[in-house]
Image: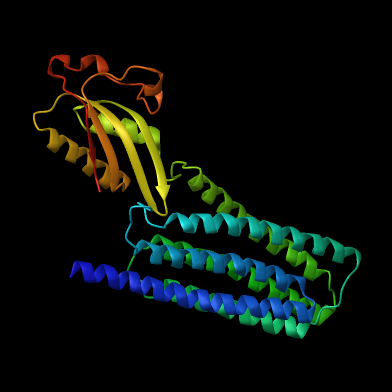
Length: 322
């Protein structure tokens, strides 16, 4: 039953993500066409913002799909890293789009262009409704706390501001004929796109460079292991990185030789799982102090290595948790 529930949850996530992606992409294209026909730069900027939503939804959808594929001999972690690579490329494209919109907005201040307020208003309202529908699809009725779905929902919710701004600009143009509001709004929306693109670029680059997940504090993890597991005297050679949403960890632990080696190993793995949500860790247990400059990586400065019972030392053993 548990296996069936897991697959039904994944199917539900995939269905909601696919529906939201379809709605967002459709109205993104509508805003591009509407912005081109009406001469509204604000609509084109909002379409760029909706592109960030579509990209986020697509990456979330791919992550759910790739998570279903089993690793193989050539791709031992599966294909989850493809979503990170797609995020990096998408972020670069968004930065380029933002630069073009800003350039066009500055040009329009010097050379104002006519804007069809009625068409702009209709497309902006349709875009707002599309964002509301996408948010409802992602948020409504979800009994699971899936990070991909929640992140995509927040991304879509942020785009509501761009659509509301486009509606306000269209109303101002229709009532007053003051067209500079269009490039002004496009600059404001561009700031939202820039913020999303920059965050996406930083997060994807962090993962591609094998950086530790920002949500996990390596120094605290080392301290917690030594304070909460009495046999652990020192933690070093710590390597923490991430593939997709999965944190991965390797580390060496200097321990007092235990009566039950496997039981201590299981306690370490259980602690990492319960307190840091790290389900995949490689733990090498050692009974002698680590010597050499390479041991400083992840070394706990408050180590009590001098208290280790050397007369019970054994050869180090390497163990894996899957």
